[in-house]
Length: 429
Image 1 (tube, one colour):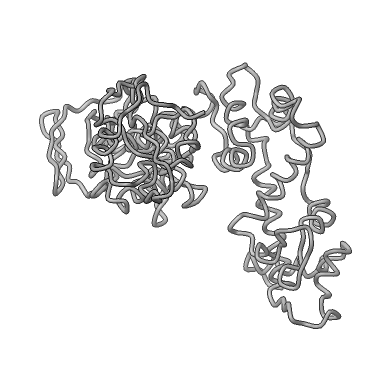
Image 2 (tube, rainbow, N blue to C red):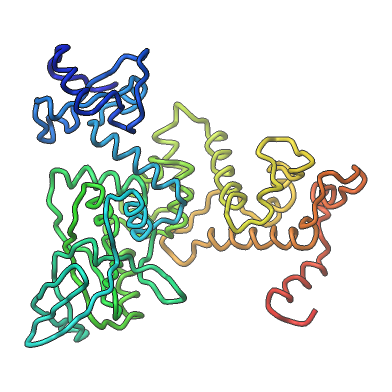
C-alpha cells in the first residue's frame, strides 16, 4: 500500500512543485503523460526527518507510486537505481559500483594513485587532488604499520583480483544487504571503519565493502578507513577469511552460492542465512526452513522441484557454459535449440548431479556443490567441443545424431572424453 501525504496540497502548491520538477516522475525521471493523473509524495519520510514542506514533495506517476509500497520516495528511487546496477552481472564488487557511479557522474574519480611518505611517527598521503597526514600505529603481533583516516572516494578502490595480481576481496555485493545498510545509515552512525591496504600506488579496501557501498548510495564522499601499509598479503588474506568465517556472527559462505541461492529464493534464503539459531547452515536446513515459513503456499514436492530448478539453472545459465545457446527456453526443442532441460535431467544430470539437498555445512570444506557445478559445466563443454560445436539447425532431420545420442543417454564415447581431457591438460592424445 502506497504512503499518502499527511495533508492534502492545493492546486497552487501542486503548480509550484511541478515548476520545480517538471512533469516528470521523481522515481525514474520519465515524463508523465498529460492523460495520466500525477501523484505527489514526500521525498524523505517524516519518520526519517523529512519536513512537511513543498521542498520535500515531488511528483510521481501512478505506476511507480503504487510500486513503491511503504518505501519513502527517495528510498524507492535509490532501490530502482540499485536494481539497475545489479543488472550488470552477478559477481559485482565495490569497484564495479565505483565504475557505475562514475558513469552516472555521481562521482568524478576513484582509485587515484597516491604517494606515501613516513616521518616521525606520521604518514603523509598525497594525490593530485588530496593531501593529509595521520599518526602511524604498529600492530604488536605482526609489526605491521597502519593508520586511521577519513579518506575521499577519489583515493579508494576495491581489493579485487586484477591483472594477475592477488586481491583480498573475498566476496561479492548482495543487493538486499546494500539496500538495508543504505537505509540504516540514514539514521545510525558507522561504528567501525572499512579495512584496506596500501599496495604501492593505491589504497585498496578488502573489508567493509557493503558498508562503503551503502554510504556511496547515501551520497557520502568520504569513508572512514583503517589502512595497513606493508602487510604480508597471504597472512592478511587468511585473517580476513577467518574474520568472515568462524569468528563472524553470521558465518561466511561461498559468495557464488549465496548469489545463486539468493537469486533463486530471494529473501527467504537471506533470512535463513541470517538466522542465528546456533545450527550450521545447509541446503537441507534451508528446505526445512522453507517448510516452516511457506507450508501453506508450497507443497514439499513444489519446494523440491524449485530446488532442482535452482541446481539446473546454476549450471545452464553460467556464462562459462558453452552449450547455453543450444538449450531451449521452453519445454520443447527446436532446430536452433535442440537441447531441453528435461533431456539433460534424464541424461547428464541424472548421472553427474546430485539433485537432493545436502546436509553439509555451507561454510565448511565438505560443501562441494560449487565444484559439482563446475564439473558439470566442464562436461557440457566437452560435449560442445566434440559433438555440438558445428550444430547446423538447417541440416536434414537424419543429420541430428548428436541430439539423438544425448536424448538416448548414449552421449560421446568415453574414449573421446578421455582424449579431450588429456588435451585440456596438454598431454599427448
